[in-house]
Length: 401
Image (cartoon, rainbow, N blue to C red; front, top):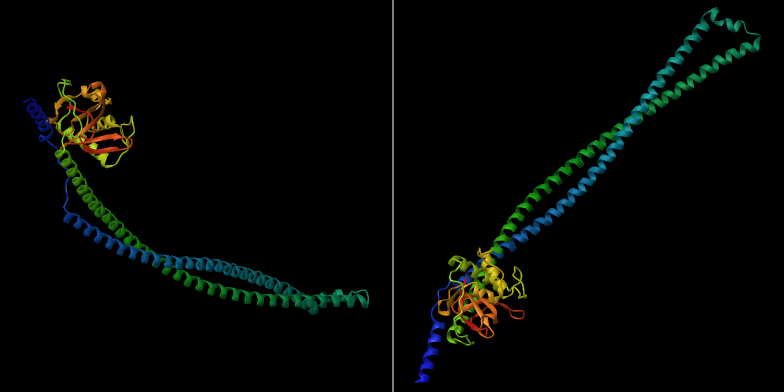
């Protein structure tokens, strides 16, 4: 009989541990067909992106070629402008020289005219030849006649020189004007070629910009399709893991010792709503699936210890000081309402003790449902999704925040 009572008691304990517990929505479990369809969509997006990338590369190559031609045309245009400036300067100098020479010829004409008039007058009246008649002897007369002759010869030479200079200046101006005209024509042709090159480059740039926009959108679409595929694969993998671990927990109950209930009491009320508990569970799950590291004394966002994960999860759900504080594992047991293990709901806290007493509680986790929990386990193990029996010393109650 005593042995039967013992077996009955054990059966009752196992029944409590295996009784169904409310749970938040499980991780979606996409089918293999859904994942395969997502892969096909991703492959189609990738093919479109690759084809667009080839078009863009070809367009960019064409743009580089047209840019080189435009740059070359720009260089020729600049050189032509410089040559035109030189030609204009030469034409202006030649025109100025021709003008100066023409003025000199006019002045020479005036001087020679005056000399001619004087000679005519001297040769045409007695008054004008008086200097010759009053000469002091034959030598003086010869000197005066010689001077007149010399003056006439010099001015004739001067006039001839000015005429020659005038002819040369006009010829130089003509050549300079012709060179200027040729250079203006050449510059106009180069400018036209430059415009053609610039217009071609501008049109190609528009084509490149259009293709770049298409490529950017296709790359964005591809990234979205890839994300969908990866999410489906991760969800399926996580759902399979949850099922496997939940099955393990269900088929091997009590694989770790549970301390007997010796009457510990916590708060009489709770501070969290069902929605806040769901948010806390989702936060803990996100940190675990992100493979955040375990660092003692850390409360996130990049690393956590066990009580730090609990604190951060409920803080993210809207509980903060003075309603919620960063406590150690033992203190959380007194700051929560105790519920039996068969009454656990996702978001309740689980406690682990060395000796079954409050003072020796050393670990705290967040119940995930179906006999599983989210926890910051240790430096070596990190953050885990695990069976509630995977840690020694489970206290016989949970703590509802």
